[in-house]
Amino acid sequence: MTKASNTAGADTVWVERDALIDRIPRWLAMTILFVIAVGVWDFVTRMGWVSPIILPSPKETLDDLIFVGRNLVTGDYMLGALWTTTLTVIYGFLIATVIGFSLGVLVGETKFGERAVMPYLVAIDTMPKIAFAPLFIAWLGFDISSKVALAAFIATFAIVVATAAGLYAASENERMLFKSMGASRMQTLIRLKLPTGLPYIFTGLKIASVGVMAGAITGEFLGGGKGFGALIRQSASQMNTPRVFALILYLSLLGLALYFSIAWMQRRLVFWNKSDRLGAIG
Image (cartoon, rainbow, N blue to C red):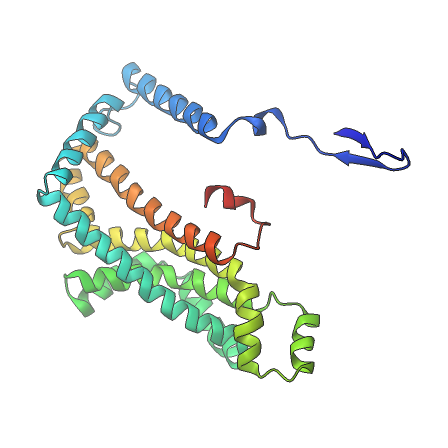
């Protein structure tokens, strides 16, 4: 803590100084962590503490990263697989957004939704959702629709909770002001509750972007298809662990692209909200 005085010398203002580790630039901190992680990874593999079948070396993984990258650039079969997974993720996320937002409004705006609908949603969310994959495959077949359904199913609940919480974010004074001005329930929802709740809603969308990736890949892994999940299953069955690592790393880029797209929209639409420190990563 450092002390600073005003010109009159009557008041004292205490300013909290950031810790030394917090003053490191973001790019430098990320680089240091990356170098340390790769260094430990390489040391463990060189010492032979873990079988190469379980944990390949960084060099082996890099070789497969280059192979997969060339395959994607040349438009070979892996590009088609990545496009299939991308469509699954996008469709699943859009469906989860529509259903989750609708249910969130129902729960946040009505006693019926809060008392009758929400308990069922919580009960469904507590179930192991991955176990529903065989059911979606049995209902919808082995094509992309079953993967989209599983991805949306996993991602929906986070949006429901975030939307309902966002609608409750408006203060009682703000709601009373709108009521005293004769605003209808719909006008209060659109002009007060939704704008106030946007930070919460976008938080739910960010969480859903992670869940939809997990659902899409799990569906492809368990239910076949032509996406990256099927390639991961095939590589794992051949004990080609470096290829599995490479495919997972490229999938992480897809997940990051979706996440940061949502974060970009949040910065544009919720520009007045500066309270979320996680805004630094999104």
